Image (cartoon, rainbow, N blue to C red; front, side, top):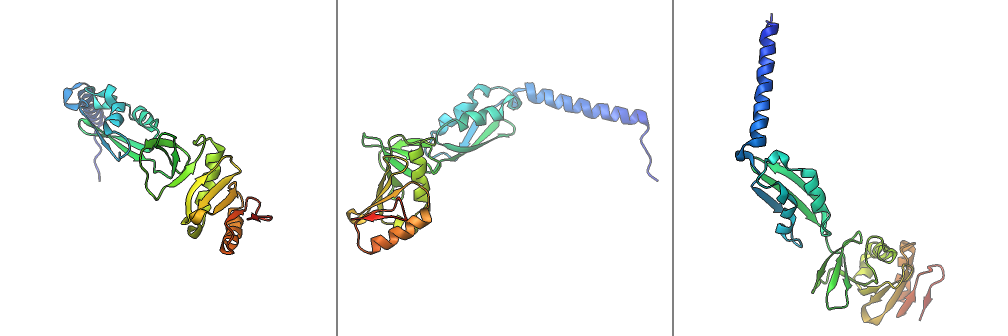
Length: 226
């Protein structure tokens, strides 16, 4: 048979545990041994790690418990190049900031021998002087996640069959309904908007294979060629 602790002993035990927890909390909250001294940043490529770490500057030399992890994450997430971020305490005196940056999907000429980097969601997050051949080169007037021309361009490019995609040298989108693909050999394929992409691809493939150099499949049921 199990013996139960007398009520008085149990109360004293609970009080002792509570006092220990309070003491531990006070020590962590007040002692320099648990003051935040280091902010470690990982996952940056486009961003300067120092710029990311600045989000936690106001908590330095204060108790690590005082660091508002959500506020730090919100400030880092406001940086255009950040797709997602995770912030955590690393006891006894560090905060970790793990960043996932946006990947470039479109390169938009900016008019001064540089390119705006745009991700697959239409977010502009960087400006560079050189681009990789794997990134779509696209002419857009006002790239951004709320720009219809940008969104229609993304819808078209993400739906292109690989064979056709390999032939695209650059893209121009003067309006949301006028996505135009400049193909190898000086050929032009007017795609229109991002609707009926499968049907447009089939029609375009057939007409290009027939030798036409300028094809318009913006209305796939009534394409035009020259």
